[in-house]
Image (cartoon, rainbow, N blue to C red; front, side):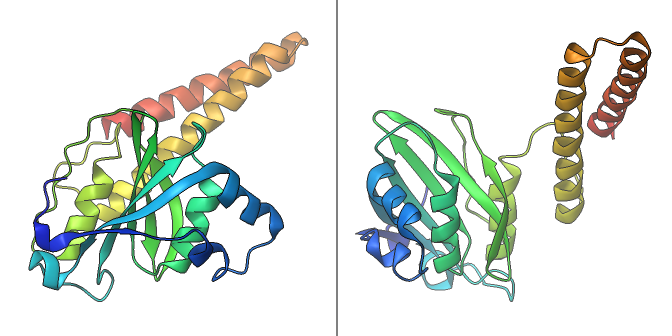
Amino acid sequence: MKLPESAKVNKFIPKTQFYNRAFVGKKLKDDFVNKIQKITWKYKLAENTLNISKTENIEEIQIFEIELKERIVPKNILQIIDKVIPYPILFIIIFQDERQYVISLKENGIASNYYFSEWNEDIDFDFTGTTLEKVYQKIIKKFISGVKKEEKDFNDIIKEDSKLKSTQDEIKKLESKLSKEKQFNRKVKINQDLLNKRKELENINNS
């Protein structure tokens, strides 16, 4: 992370700080215990640590490192941490010598639409900008591929990415449905729907 010493926190946070404050049930508590080895608050990106102005939407950005006991990223646990911490969080997920990054689209303290890097994907994050909101948007853009981002409004990029993912999911469902269908007439109809969706995906990628 290309960040100044002033932004470094490097503080261990007990798992109880999250599941007790979020009032979760036994299953989620067990997930914290059984799946998470350690949670470390690595960096705090704020006006007084980066000398970058906050905005009404983004006052701070946190960077947490989560060490896993197994190579499965527990999204339910990330959601609990995001629920307890009101600021956007860039998660660094560690399992043995592997690494993955995760961040959510967070508005008014509510996280949605999680973005995951591939395991061991090398991402060159850029933590510069005129405001912390711009920094946050630049971080999220690093996770988005398949959408042309040059000179586009951030909200438009998010909408296009959401549409792209939705269309990709629909294509997978249609492909699965087509492979299982036995009746010829239905196969023809599904195949036509599939061709239309693939064309729609092509248009999104070329927009």
